[in-house]
Length: 349
Image (tube, rainbow, N blue to C red; front, side):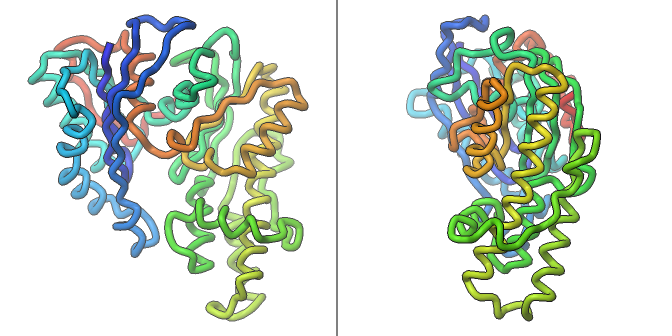
Protein backbone atom coordinates (compact mmCIF):
# COMPACT_ATOMS: atom_id res chain seq x y z
CA UNK A 1 0.00 0.00 0.00
CA UNK A 2 1.40 3.39 -1.04
CA UNK A 3 0.20 6.59 0.60
CA UNK A 4 0.82 10.11 -0.68
CA UNK A 5 0.97 12.61 2.17
CA UNK A 6 0.49 16.35 1.59
CA UNK A 7 1.21 19.03 4.22
CA UNK A 8 0.57 22.80 3.98
CA UNK A 9 -0.64 23.81 7.45
CA UNK A 10 1.81 26.65 7.99
CA UNK A 11 5.01 27.58 6.16
CA UNK A 12 6.30 24.23 4.93
CA UNK A 13 5.11 22.79 1.63
CA UNK A 14 5.65 19.05 1.93
CA UNK A 15 4.82 15.80 0.19
CA UNK A 16 5.88 12.23 0.92
CA UNK A 17 5.29 8.70 -0.27
CA UNK A 18 4.96 6.07 2.44
CA UNK A 19 4.80 2.35 1.70
CA UNK A 20 3.20 -0.11 4.11
CA UNK A 21 3.19 -3.89 3.40
CA UNK A 22 -0.37 -4.35 4.64
CA UNK A 23 -3.54 -2.26 4.73
CA UNK A 24 -3.98 -3.28 8.38
CA UNK A 25 -1.73 -2.26 11.24
CA UNK A 26 0.33 -5.19 12.48
CA UNK A 27 3.19 -5.46 14.92
CA UNK A 28 5.47 -6.52 12.06
CA UNK A 29 4.60 -3.59 9.81
CA UNK A 30 7.53 -1.61 8.50
CA UNK A 31 6.90 1.92 7.32
CA UNK A 32 9.14 2.53 4.32
CA UNK A 33 9.53 6.19 3.42
CA UNK A 34 9.97 6.26 -0.34
CA UNK A 35 10.26 10.06 -0.42
CA UNK A 36 9.88 12.97 1.99
CA UNK A 37 10.16 16.39 0.36
CA UNK A 38 9.94 19.59 2.42
CA UNK A 39 10.15 23.09 0.95
CA UNK A 40 10.62 25.48 3.87
CA UNK A 41 9.69 29.15 3.84
CA UNK A 42 11.73 30.04 6.93
CA UNK A 43 14.10 32.29 5.00
CA UNK A 44 11.17 34.19 3.48
CA UNK A 45 9.52 34.92 6.83
CA UNK A 46 12.74 35.79 8.69
CA UNK A 47 12.49 39.48 7.86
CA UNK A 48 9.00 39.60 9.39
CA UNK A 49 10.00 37.77 12.57
CA UNK A 50 7.09 35.35 12.11
CA UNK A 51 4.66 33.81 9.64
CA UNK A 52 2.64 36.08 7.36
CA UNK A 53 -0.37 33.95 6.30
CA UNK A 54 -0.92 35.56 2.89
CA UNK A 55 2.75 35.26 1.98
CA UNK A 56 2.80 31.62 3.11
CA UNK A 57 -0.28 30.78 1.02
CA UNK A 58 1.13 32.34 -2.15
CA UNK A 59 4.36 30.41 -1.72
CA UNK A 60 2.43 27.17 -1.23
CA UNK A 61 0.68 27.78 -4.54
CA UNK A 62 4.03 28.21 -6.28
CA UNK A 63 5.66 25.11 -4.81
CA UNK A 64 2.92 22.52 -4.19
CA UNK A 65 3.02 20.88 -7.64
CA UNK A 66 6.84 20.69 -7.93
CA UNK A 67 7.02 19.27 -4.39
CA UNK A 68 4.42 16.58 -5.15
CA UNK A 69 6.19 15.76 -8.41
CA UNK A 70 9.41 15.35 -6.46
CA UNK A 71 7.72 12.99 -4.02
CA UNK A 72 6.34 10.86 -6.87
CA UNK A 73 9.68 10.64 -8.72
CA UNK A 74 11.74 9.06 -10.15
CA UNK A 75 9.28 6.44 -11.39
CA UNK A 76 5.70 7.56 -11.05
CA UNK A 77 3.46 5.08 -9.28
CA UNK A 78 -0.07 6.12 -8.48
CA UNK A 79 -0.70 5.95 -4.73
CA UNK A 80 -3.46 3.84 -3.22
CA UNK A 81 -4.46 6.58 -0.79
CA UNK A 82 -3.97 10.33 -0.41
CA UNK A 83 -3.65 11.85 3.07
CA UNK A 84 -3.74 15.63 3.43
CA UNK A 85 -3.50 17.92 6.42
CA UNK A 86 -7.06 19.18 6.90
CA UNK A 87 -6.33 21.25 10.02
CA UNK A 88 -5.58 22.89 12.32
CA UNK A 89 -3.44 25.61 10.77
CA UNK A 90 -3.57 28.77 8.69
CA UNK A 91 -6.77 28.57 6.67
CA UNK A 92 -5.23 30.12 3.54
CA UNK A 93 -2.33 27.65 3.68
CA UNK A 94 -4.53 24.65 4.42
CA UNK A 95 -6.74 25.44 1.44
CA UNK A 96 -3.83 25.00 -0.97
CA UNK A 97 -3.05 21.47 0.19
CA UNK A 98 -6.67 20.41 0.57
CA UNK A 99 -7.76 21.64 -2.86
CA UNK A 100 -4.72 20.05 -4.51
CA UNK A 101 -5.39 16.72 -2.77
CA UNK A 102 -9.07 16.81 -3.78
CA UNK A 103 -8.12 17.41 -7.39
CA UNK A 104 -5.69 14.49 -7.43
CA UNK A 105 -8.20 12.20 -5.71
CA UNK A 106 -10.77 13.06 -8.37
CA UNK A 107 -8.41 12.65 -11.32
CA UNK A 108 -6.93 9.39 -10.05
CA UNK A 109 -10.23 8.14 -8.56
CA UNK A 110 -8.59 7.04 -5.32
CA UNK A 111 -9.61 7.50 -1.67
CA UNK A 112 -8.73 10.70 0.20
CA UNK A 113 -8.52 11.15 3.96
CA UNK A 114 -8.15 14.38 5.90
CA UNK A 115 -5.57 14.29 8.67
CA UNK A 116 -5.42 16.24 11.91
CA UNK A 117 -2.03 17.94 11.96
CA UNK A 118 -1.64 17.43 15.72
CA UNK A 119 -2.47 13.73 15.46
CA UNK A 120 0.22 13.41 12.78
CA UNK A 121 2.75 14.96 15.15
CA UNK A 122 1.57 12.70 17.98
CA UNK A 123 2.29 9.48 16.07
CA UNK A 124 5.38 10.72 14.20
CA UNK A 125 7.62 8.74 16.58
CA UNK A 126 6.41 5.56 14.83
CA UNK A 127 8.60 6.54 11.89
CA UNK A 128 11.67 5.98 14.07
CA UNK A 129 13.70 2.86 13.39
CA UNK A 130 13.50 1.64 16.99
CA UNK A 131 9.89 2.47 17.89
CA UNK A 132 7.85 1.96 14.74
CA UNK A 133 6.44 -1.38 15.87
CA UNK A 134 4.95 -0.16 19.14
CA UNK A 135 1.39 1.12 19.24
CA UNK A 136 -1.86 0.90 21.18
CA UNK A 137 -2.17 -1.64 23.99
CA UNK A 138 1.55 -1.99 24.70
CA UNK A 139 2.02 1.71 25.47
CA UNK A 140 -1.49 2.94 26.28
CA UNK A 141 -2.91 4.84 27.94
CA UNK A 142 -0.31 7.50 27.25
CA UNK A 143 0.18 11.18 27.89
CA UNK A 144 0.71 12.96 24.59
CA UNK A 145 2.40 16.35 24.51
CA UNK A 146 2.31 18.19 21.19
CA UNK A 147 4.45 21.33 21.25
CA UNK A 148 5.27 23.64 18.37
CA UNK A 149 5.20 27.25 17.25
CA UNK A 150 1.43 27.23 17.02
CA UNK A 151 0.34 24.56 19.48
CA UNK A 152 0.89 23.41 23.06
CA UNK A 153 -1.56 20.67 23.99
CA UNK A 154 -1.53 17.77 26.42
CA UNK A 155 -3.86 14.85 25.74
CA UNK A 156 -4.68 11.53 27.30
CA UNK A 157 -4.17 9.01 24.49
CA UNK A 158 -6.49 6.02 24.77
CA UNK A 159 -6.00 4.79 21.20
CA UNK A 160 -5.78 6.01 17.63
CA UNK A 161 -8.48 8.65 17.29
CA UNK A 162 -9.36 8.44 20.99
CA UNK A 163 -8.00 11.53 22.74
CA UNK A 164 -9.01 13.54 25.79
CA UNK A 165 -7.71 17.08 26.05
CA UNK A 166 -6.37 17.61 29.58
CA UNK A 167 -4.24 20.72 29.15
CA UNK A 168 -3.28 23.48 26.74
CA UNK A 169 -1.62 26.88 26.70
CA UNK A 170 -3.75 29.79 27.77
CA UNK A 171 -1.73 32.27 25.72
CA UNK A 172 1.47 31.75 23.73
CA UNK A 173 2.39 28.36 22.36
CA UNK A 174 5.79 27.28 23.60
CA UNK A 175 7.41 27.59 20.17
CA UNK A 176 5.89 31.05 19.81
CA UNK A 177 7.50 32.05 23.12
CA UNK A 178 10.88 30.87 21.81
CA UNK A 179 10.37 32.98 18.67
CA UNK A 180 9.45 36.09 20.66
CA UNK A 181 12.39 35.78 23.04
CA UNK A 182 14.74 35.32 20.11
CA UNK A 183 13.29 38.48 18.59
CA UNK A 184 13.85 40.40 21.85
CA UNK A 185 17.48 39.31 21.74
CA UNK A 186 17.83 40.14 18.04
CA UNK A 187 18.74 36.55 17.18
CA UNK A 188 16.42 35.99 14.22
CA UNK A 189 13.75 33.48 13.29
CA UNK A 190 12.82 30.70 14.00
CA UNK A 191 13.76 31.11 17.64
CA UNK A 192 13.84 27.55 18.96
CA UNK A 193 17.05 26.29 17.32
CA UNK A 194 18.80 29.63 17.82
CA UNK A 195 18.04 29.87 21.53
CA UNK A 196 19.01 26.23 22.07
CA UNK A 197 22.31 26.90 20.31
CA UNK A 198 23.29 29.84 22.52
CA UNK A 199 21.91 28.18 25.66
CA UNK A 200 24.56 25.47 25.36
CA UNK A 201 27.20 28.03 26.35
CA UNK A 202 25.09 29.72 29.03
CA UNK A 203 24.43 29.05 32.72
CA UNK A 204 20.77 28.02 33.24
CA UNK A 205 21.01 28.86 36.96
CA UNK A 206 22.42 32.37 36.61
CA UNK A 207 19.11 34.01 35.71
CA UNK A 208 16.05 32.47 37.32
CA UNK A 209 12.98 33.26 35.26
CA UNK A 210 9.46 32.44 36.51
CA UNK A 211 7.89 29.01 35.93
CA UNK A 212 4.29 30.01 35.07
CA UNK A 213 1.53 27.70 36.34
CA UNK A 214 4.06 25.16 37.57
CA UNK A 215 2.09 24.66 40.79
CA UNK A 216 -1.41 25.03 39.34
CA UNK A 217 -3.73 22.05 39.98
CA UNK A 218 -4.56 21.68 36.28
CA UNK A 219 -2.43 20.81 33.28
CA UNK A 220 -2.71 24.09 31.41
CA UNK A 221 0.31 26.16 30.44
CA UNK A 222 1.19 29.84 30.11
CA UNK A 223 4.35 31.09 28.44
CA UNK A 224 3.53 34.74 27.90
CA UNK A 225 4.69 35.64 31.41
CA UNK A 226 8.15 34.14 31.12
CA UNK A 227 8.59 35.91 27.77
CA UNK A 228 7.61 39.21 29.45
CA UNK A 229 10.03 38.47 32.29
CA UNK A 230 12.83 38.19 29.73
CA UNK A 231 11.75 41.51 28.20
CA UNK A 232 11.93 43.36 31.52
CA UNK A 233 15.18 41.66 32.48
CA UNK A 234 16.77 42.92 29.28
CA UNK A 235 15.32 46.41 29.81
CA UNK A 236 16.79 46.62 33.29
CA UNK A 237 20.05 44.95 32.39
CA UNK A 238 21.47 47.13 29.68
CA UNK A 239 20.25 49.17 26.68
CA UNK A 240 19.20 47.00 23.76
CA UNK A 241 22.05 46.43 21.34
CA UNK A 242 24.80 46.40 23.95
CA UNK A 243 24.40 42.87 25.24
CA UNK A 244 27.54 40.80 25.47
CA UNK A 245 27.54 37.29 24.05
CA UNK A 246 27.88 35.88 27.57
CA UNK A 247 24.74 37.76 28.64
CA UNK A 248 22.82 36.45 25.64
CA UNK A 249 23.94 32.90 26.38
CA UNK A 250 22.77 33.13 30.00
CA UNK A 251 19.39 34.61 29.06
CA UNK A 252 18.84 31.83 26.52
CA UNK A 253 19.84 29.16 29.01
CA UNK A 254 17.69 30.58 31.80
CA UNK A 255 14.64 30.98 29.59
CA UNK A 256 14.99 27.51 28.07
CA UNK A 257 15.38 25.92 31.50
CA UNK A 258 12.23 27.62 32.78
CA UNK A 259 10.22 26.27 29.84
CA UNK A 260 11.66 22.76 30.15
CA UNK A 261 10.94 22.64 33.88
CA UNK A 262 7.27 23.46 33.35
CA UNK A 263 6.75 21.05 30.44
CA UNK A 264 8.50 18.13 32.12
CA UNK A 265 6.96 18.58 35.56
CA UNK A 266 3.38 18.85 34.31
CA UNK A 267 3.79 15.93 31.90
CA UNK A 268 5.10 13.55 34.58
CA UNK A 269 2.43 14.59 37.09
CA UNK A 270 -0.26 14.02 34.45
CA UNK A 271 1.15 10.57 33.70
CA UNK A 272 0.96 9.68 37.38
CA UNK A 273 -2.58 11.01 37.77
CA UNK A 274 -3.95 9.15 34.75
CA UNK A 275 -1.87 6.01 35.37
CA UNK A 276 -0.29 6.23 31.95
CA UNK A 277 2.14 3.64 30.67
CA UNK A 278 4.08 6.03 28.49
CA UNK A 279 4.71 9.60 27.39
CA UNK A 280 4.57 10.56 23.71
CA UNK A 281 6.20 13.77 22.52
CA UNK A 282 5.69 15.43 19.14
CA UNK A 283 5.94 18.76 17.32
CA UNK A 284 8.72 21.12 16.35
CA UNK A 285 9.82 21.87 19.93
CA UNK A 286 10.29 18.13 20.53
CA UNK A 287 13.66 18.59 18.82
CA UNK A 288 14.88 20.47 21.92
CA UNK A 289 17.63 18.29 23.37
CA UNK A 290 17.51 19.53 27.01
CA UNK A 291 13.79 18.73 26.98
CA UNK A 292 14.45 15.24 25.59
CA UNK A 293 17.19 14.64 28.16
CA UNK A 294 15.09 15.75 31.12
CA UNK A 295 11.97 13.89 30.02
CA UNK A 296 14.03 10.75 29.41
CA UNK A 297 15.35 10.93 32.96
CA UNK A 298 12.06 11.72 34.64
CA UNK A 299 10.06 9.09 32.74
CA UNK A 300 12.69 6.47 33.50
CA UNK A 301 12.51 7.35 37.20
CA UNK A 302 8.72 6.91 37.02
CA UNK A 303 8.93 3.60 35.10
CA UNK A 304 7.30 5.14 32.02
CA UNK A 305 8.16 4.45 28.41
CA UNK A 306 9.09 7.55 26.46
CA UNK A 307 8.64 8.04 22.72
CA UNK A 308 9.72 10.99 20.63
CA UNK A 309 10.35 11.51 16.91
CA UNK A 310 13.68 11.48 15.15
CA UNK A 311 14.92 15.04 14.44
CA UNK A 312 13.87 14.93 10.78
CA UNK A 313 10.26 14.25 11.80
CA UNK A 314 9.91 16.90 14.51
CA UNK A 315 9.05 19.76 12.17
CA UNK A 316 6.14 19.84 9.75
CA UNK A 317 6.57 17.08 7.17
CA UNK A 318 4.37 14.91 4.97
CA UNK A 319 5.70 11.51 6.05
CA UNK A 320 3.89 11.89 9.37
CA UNK A 321 0.76 12.99 7.49
CA UNK A 322 0.90 9.86 5.33
CA UNK A 323 1.33 7.75 8.48
CA UNK A 324 -1.68 9.40 10.13
CA UNK A 325 -3.61 8.77 6.92
CA UNK A 326 -2.74 5.08 7.17
CA UNK A 327 -3.99 4.98 10.76
CA UNK A 328 -7.24 6.69 9.71
CA UNK A 329 -7.76 4.96 6.37
CA UNK A 330 -11.20 3.67 7.41
CA UNK A 331 -12.45 7.23 6.96
CA UNK A 332 -11.32 7.26 3.33
CA UNK A 333 -13.67 6.28 0.52
CA UNK A 334 -13.44 6.88 -3.24
CA UNK A 335 -15.43 9.97 -4.18
CA UNK A 336 -15.45 11.49 -0.70
CA UNK A 337 -13.17 14.31 -1.85
CA UNK A 338 -16.24 16.51 -2.41
CA UNK A 339 -16.99 16.65 1.32
CA UNK A 340 -13.48 17.43 2.54
CA UNK A 341 -12.94 21.01 3.77
CA UNK A 342 -10.09 22.73 5.59
CA UNK A 343 -10.65 23.24 9.33
CA UNK A 344 -8.37 25.92 10.75
CA UNK A 345 -9.37 25.23 14.37
CA UNK A 346 -9.76 21.45 14.25
CA UNK A 347 -9.21 20.12 17.76
CA UNK A 348 -7.31 16.91 18.37
CA UNK A 349 -9.68 15.88 21.17
